Length: 282
Ligand code: FE2
Image (tube, rainbow, N blue to C red):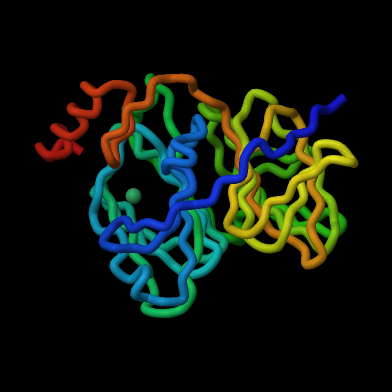
């Protein structure tokens, strides 16, 4: 018998700025939700106004975790110190394992129009924090879309109950990253690994999350619903349909010490990262 997840807490993001002055909303990694192991940070950005995003994220380092960029609208160019360069376009994913260190820039590849998307930071376990950097990048046409009656499921990573497998693989945290669109009042039921921490993030419309037929709570646009324990999610869209992300990952249960763009297990490792970066060892 499946144990259905319910909403433990609704989190609203906190408007902030990062990079060279990009307006964004921090949903994980802020006072209301410091982290959700293995997720260290979730930023969302959505603006039609180039003033909010044009400055981008000039050259900066990362060590010890992964940055995951998913764009809904617009284009971002990234470039790193190892000569890797490309453009992420609408519907595309970049899963970057920073590992022992990367220095890169992330800049809007547009001068006007809507830029909308997410950046998620996924932690790496202690014995993989110093792995060589690598990328898993897929444009929209390489992300499978599973069709069910009244619903479309874009599978970025993980495997659905119907066998659709996302192109990104990360056995260390076993993530599930689904972008789900439901038509008016349609339902969606999916198993989620019991040991994972999981959340739903509302993109459009209203999504009702059912614990049982008499008991539901709702998550709406720009809210994160922190999910309870359980091994199944059952949701129904409101009248106008809904779109949301379902993200889940296996907790690492290790000490987390942050030093800005470096996330390690101890202060000494963060100091080492700063020293390595400053002396050009990235
Ligand atoms: Fe970055």
